[in-house]
Image 1 (cartoon, rainbow, N blue to C red):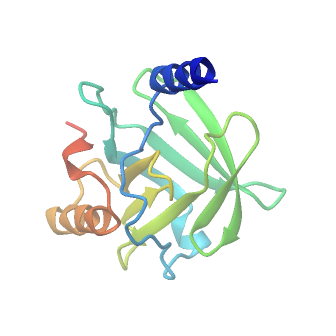
Image 2: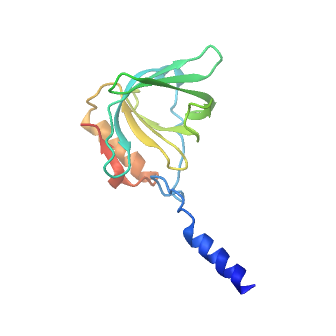
Image 3: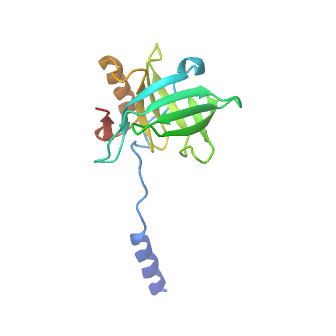
Length: 165
């Protein structure tokens, strides 16, 4: 019996540590009630995102558009010109549920948008993703500061937020 316990202990010690994500799961988390699909649709530029140390953040272009099936499609184009498609169901105001195998897992929530829908903060409840979008590549400093404050409030590790340069 003690041999089995020792084996179980050693196996547990050798198990990989689970990824915590970029936020404290005990922090509050909510999608914005200001969300309006028609105002959110269109082109955005990723101006900041959470990344592992040493991982560069690119100024991806996000084009959100309605699908004929009622979903929201995000065509995301990297600096290399390659585009990936993510498809979401809108399940509540500002709450996008992934649909299809090419869309990263986990609901993606719109946490905040400024009054003019020029800057937006998106993240996942798990903290696996979080990023700031703007209608231009150079957001106004006050809106960028507000976006950072929102991410901080929702428990994101601000030391891991990288601004696109």
